[in-house]
Amino acid sequence: MAWDRDQMAARAAEELEDGMYVNLGIGIPTLVANYTGDKDITLQSENGMLGMGPFPYEGEEDPDLINAGKQTITELNRTSYFDSATSFGMIRGGKIAAAILGAMEVAENGDLANWMIPGKLVKGMGGAMDLVAGVKRVIVVMDHTNKAGESKLLKSCTLPLTGKAVVDRIITNLGVLDVVEGGLKIVETADGVTEDEIRAATEATIVG
Amino acid sequence: MKKVYDNAAEALDGLLKDGMFISAGGFGLCGIPELLIDAIVDSGVKDLTIASNNCGVDGFGLGKLLDTKQIRKMISSYVGENAEFMRQYLSGELELEFNPQGTLAERMRAGGSGIPGFYTKTGVGTQIADGKEVKVFDGEEYILERGIVADLAIVKAWKADDTGNLVFRKTARNFNPPAAMSGKVCVVEVEEIVERGALDPDCIHLPGIYVHRIIQGPHEKRIEKVTTRKKETA
Image (cartoon, rainbow over all chains, first blue to last red; front, side, top):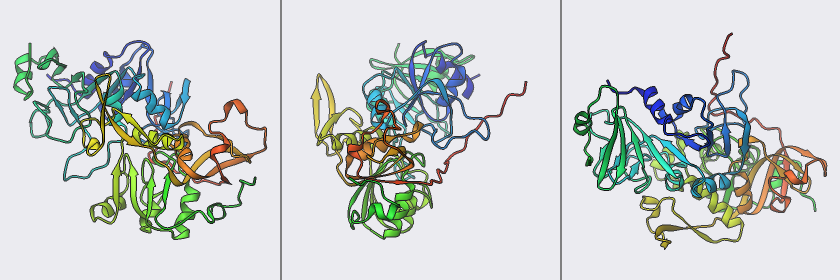
């Protein structure tokens, strides 16, 4: 039994420690906020906010208060606001402890591709390149394989890169892998998944 | 020193010319200078190069300038919300330079601060680095990015006094201060112009030195993605 989206998000939340400033990407990473429990985590939204709160109640939306996905959100009693240059200053400057992001492909050396597919609609990288270049720890949460059943953990990325050798840890529906010298290391398997099953579903070199 | 104007058309009078370079504040539809954009549409000025994180949506914000084909080139980090943008881009009518979001913000801040270029690790080893100088500092590679100095900056703030001191509201601040800084001339639209002394000098987000002309709303302030939760019933 592989992990579902919520179980992957819950596992990713275990990566966060009390007192951390964290940036969550769109998709499964957004769900991580539901599983931080009693830990004192401050969420950064790169459009200029620390201390992001939940979605507003109906009728309480504020057009001046959105997250990086353009969704209406709320503030907390710890919230601070700042401009985009300051926001990316803290990202690029290594002040954000961790970013949890989705991905299309990750290579065994930590290369990440998650912003464009040549020949398809290109929307832009937004803040993803700055985030992976700057934050202390980059954690990717994604399905282990694509819709065709092919591994998304590769020897080298086929798609244009978002960042080179930037990923530290990958959490998939099958388990948890770290980027280490020489390839990927399995550090945990999802409930009911064996290491052999992970190896069979992975194109990247698995070491150890 | 008269900075306050009656409306957007008057505030832009004499500042617009074909082929000019404009920096615009805003993130998505949040904190965009919607009145100044409308006035630029009405002016008919064309062949614009615009540095802005996004390009509005179809029919609102900078999307209006796409409908009238007044934009020649966009410098942006994300343009996914706009079908007309894609149509013009794919047909070759519109030029697009993708910048990582933080690089774009810093290019504006740097340009306005007298810094013609800076080195960043954002984009090293990616397409973004193609053709850019690479320099190694302390064993790590960085790429050279250029500061942006625009002919005109158009920005949106919450409150201003008549000297141009600005206060922004919540996440509507976003690109507005760096965009304002990057302009040789900066025109600001606000929701309220207040009396001198009404803004706490310790709480000014952008000093009036960056602001040359000011107009007051009303603003539509459209929301791009209304997302809510249900009230828990006890």
